[in-house]
Length: 419
Image (tube, rainbow, N blue to C red; front, side):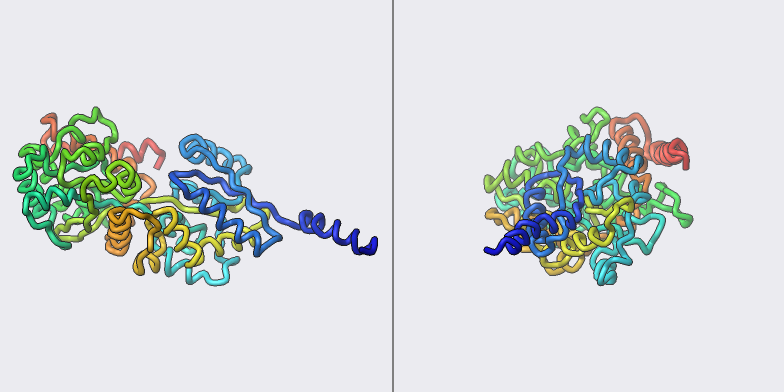
C-alpha cells in the first residue's frame, strides 16, 4: 500500500471519532430491557456512525428518583433518560417537534400519553412510553373449573364478579373470594367505572360523588361479609400492600392488581395452576383500569438536539418499538401496536395471554383515568382515599366522615406543596 493511502487508512477512523457525537442516556432496569435497548442502539449506531449513545444504567430509586432531578436542576443532566415522574420533570424536557420528520405519527400513537409529559405545553413532544402499565384483575381459572362455575364474560359488573368468586370460594374451600392491592391507584379505576369523576368543573380534585361512594361502599361491604381478604387493606399497617402473595398461594380467587405482575407470576406460579388476566369489570360509567408506566424523554440542555431526535425517532418507530415491547414483555404505550397486538416472546402461554389482555385494556381506558394519572398531585389523592377508607374498614370512621376527611386531606396536601 502506498504511504499516502496507508496514512489515509489510519486517519479515517480518527476523523470519524473526532466527528462523532456522543449522547448519554440514563437508564434503569426492571428486567431485560437494558440489554434489549443496547442491542437496538448498536444497530442504530451501525447505520449512523456519526452518533454514539452511551447508556448509564442506574438504580431506579437512587439514580432516577433522587439523583436525576438534581442533575437536571444543576444543568448537568444527560441527553435522554428513562423516567416515571412524567409530569414532574417536564420543565427540563426538550420539545422534539421541530426536529421530527413526522410529528403527526407521535401525536397519533402517543398522544394520550404525551399529555402526561406536557402539563404546561399541549404541543410539546418530549418522548415516548417505554412501558405502559395497566391495572386489572387476575383470576385463578383452575378454581373456577374445579367449582364448575362459569367465569363472568367481558362486560360483567364488579358485583357479578364478586358473586361468582364467592361461589367459587365456597365450592372449593378457598379462604377468600377477592383481593385488591391496598392502593388508591388500584381503587381509582374501579371507582371511575362506577362514575367517580375525581375532578370538579374547574379541574380541582373532588371526591364526594355518587360513583366514588358506590365503589367505597362495595369495598366496605366486601370486607364486612368476608368476600375480600382483610390482610391487605386492614392488616397493612398504613402502607402500600400488594395481594400477590395471597394469589400465588391460592388463598383468593380474584386479585385486582396490574400488568406488572405478569413476569412475577410467570416465574412464581408458572403453570402450577391456570392464572388468567381478565378485562376490567364494569360499572354504570365505564369498564376501566388505571394507566401508568415509564417514558424515554429528551432534555433541553443537550448540545445535540438534532442527533437526539434521530435516536428518538429510530427507537419510537413502529418496527423497533414492536420488537422492544415483544422482547421485554412490556405493555405497548403505542396505540397502534396496542390495538394490533404484540407477539410477546415468552414460552409460557399463560403469560402471553395475560399480556395481550392488558394490552387490549389500553384502548378501553376512560378519559378520567388518563386525567387522574396525569394530575401532578395524584399521589395526594391516592394516599388520602386509601388511608381514610381503611379507617372505615376498621370502624374508626363512617363513610361520610371518611369522604369529608379525604377531601380535606387532599386540599391540605396540595396547599402544603405550595399550590
